[in-house]
Length: 535
Image (cartoon, rainbow, N blue to C red; front, side, top):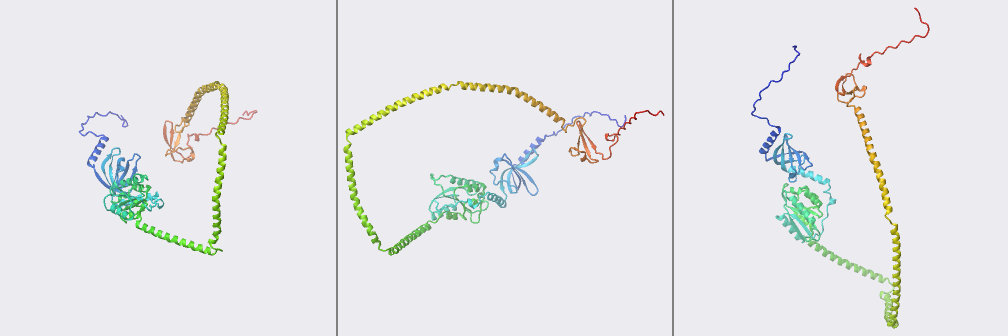
């Protein structure tokens, strides 16, 4: 047997080894690791910077926490998103609490976040600046949308804590300046629940109807004493700011001291430096108003006196310019008026006596017998008219009954039925023609579609016919012209049953190729007719 010959022998039967460590499936290992992580790291707190925030359509939030060396994926389930202390934003440094788990489908671990808070005042202020910029772009800080405060409020609503010095200072200052009705809506002014309670109080006051059992406030004051940035942070809530901006009642923001600034200070209609300043801003001073009214009354009396004196002076000046005294000018007119009034009384008496005589003459003519005769004549005329009216009505009814019978005779349903029968016959004929035409048309269209499909299949360059090949470059692009080929270029010749490589030759056509085949020799010309040569 030569060296190039090989002999194939089947594999030798090996004894099955005994294994004390059976192999695990991938799923078993993944879920074992998942249980180990959840048991070991069931409650952890992490501090890092948020990046790659993805809010899924299902409501879940996927993000990445990173520091200068490492990163970890995180997920916030839909039910926990609203309860977060801060909303996740890219670039925000936060402290999160949750548990470590794994995602077996990708063999990666992640943290399921249950709570989130900003890491320090710097992060809180950065988040606040971003929120302020967004609200400013929406136009919530524009001065043109702020409402003016009522000059003389009858009812003031105060939203603050029921305990503490703030409510006492506000009530005392209002009672001192402008005694009016004050309605206090108690809320907490610190912590996670403060923003929601203050927003509910504003919406509650705004929903009160004028003229109801509880008077609707003309003005609202949101008040709180001073504190740290964290203590006042609930008044930087976005939902609370939008509620303040959407309220129909004017709102004064009095949160913190003069140097403290919160988000609702920018969206409220007026900002007060302190709660006491808010009470002064909302109310006028009653004593000053009384003094102003008294001063205006005094000035009105003085102005009226000056006006009367001026008119008296002008009247005297005009009277001096008259040719006679005013009394002399009016004496003749007064005398004529006296004579006319005396004649008017006697003329009225004569007029009354004349009308009494006319009435007596007319009453003498109206005797009972004459009245009865006139009534009888009127009754006779009324009876004649009634008789003629009854006869005319009966004749009119009879005439219309005859016309109705004639019209009813002409209105027969037979023409309508004949018209419907004709239309029904035409519809059935059209339906019969359509039943025979539609299948034939569908059959012709199906044959035509089959022929086009066969033609398309035969012309498909991806399926070359016998005797043809498709030329492709190294990148799979089809080559359709010889000018695009270069000498030495590698190509693929694709046939119907496979492909073969080829190289483009740039020289003359090789021998044996169709291009190098010798041309056939020309046939000899026939000799001219005539006697040929014998030698």
